[in-house]
Length: 152
Image 1 (cartoon, rainbow, N blue to C red):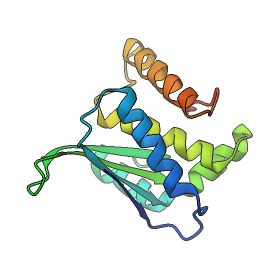
Image 2 (image 1 turned 180 degrees about the horizontal axis):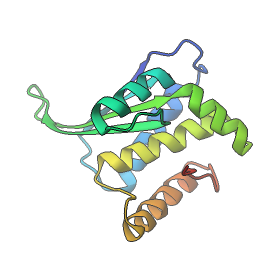
Image 3 (image 1 turned 180 degrees about the vertical axis):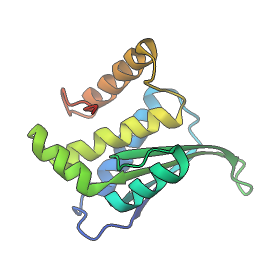
Image 4 (image 1 turned 135 degrees about the vertical axis):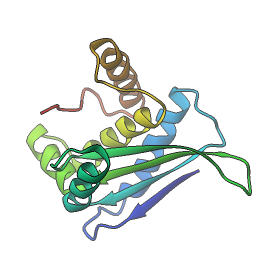
């Protein structure tokens, strides 16, 4: 189950459903547990900056953060995969720079976040190549074409 928690006032109405669909596509593509759940939090730059600083030691904002979990829901015995936080102001700015809609950018960020929850990383070139290939395949399945994470 995918939970979308909207903490941002200016969220496009269709966005939560699109993000749920993007997360499900990523989970299915990666053969993740079908009974697993995760939470997507739509928030702002300040919250991501604080979390990035407090948990990762990086004193700057970012577009998406993932916090994997190895917890199990005590009622259903289903795995809880973790939390993905997306800065919608950052997503809007990046979408404008890239020439596509915020909905596309936010889906890209959620797919990227799900891949991190499932153990993908991009610190090493070989890992990055695998992650970017998986990401591109999922985005193509979603009909989003050739959008990709921009690294600063």
